[in-house]
Image (cartoon, rainbow, N blue to C red; front, top):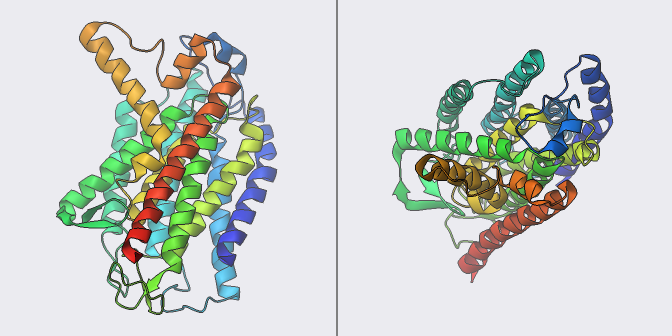
Length: 373
């Protein structure tokens, strides 16, 4: 727990204190956010607000992870057979998706700023980059088993744990890995349309994965079998690899988002841009895969699913009938045009995000109670 707290504290401080420096730096570089001319007119005053603030979230999270690992070296845990001294392949996959998905977003933001319009990187370019990243880290996640035989990702579809009868094989597992990464990255990216919306929603989801990762870390079994909860063994009750790394990175990213939210809340002094939203989407996808909760992710990240579905419904309706279901998609823009204030939309959507995260945690804990009862 100490390493998680240290990582979260470092991430929060780096983000809180580093964001003002980023605001000044990006403003000096004239890295202002271009605003869509066909969007809500209330967004026009935001033209020129510094963007690419996701760089701060990434730097804060990586620095926090390093601080957490240093704390483990200084104050070793009593379970050396489970927690290794150096960074693990789990951290490599989680940080890799976090940083490289963020890099795609950075390219997108850079092109928007350079061209002075909201076009940025093409959808095909984004998808190609996400596919390459998904393949590379999917292969890494399914290779290099731990001493207990666990890899970062699984060849089995999972809900609150692996579902044994839903084996997909290595090729299927890589395809599943890609689908989760691409869908989650784009879902978080779509949610980033109002001041603080994606940041606050990400805090709820990341906090849920902090709880799941730490819960998996603290529960050991003698035989590693579901239901064998005697807490005296040397293997995890959950068939996962390096759950402490998961908890540390989820906690660090959540804390970094909270520090950033201080400056990103309405009226935002800086936007995370695609740099931040795509990085957070990649990390959330990795957390779901590493904790074996792939099918639980749509519940934990329920707000992201709702907003993505609103865009899909809008496009299908317009292409098939020529009519729009919503005044504008994604969904938060519809409520803007209906007349809701930006702050009301963000707070209400945060509530939805919190309810989704709480429901996912409830299902996860309910499985534990069922197994121990």
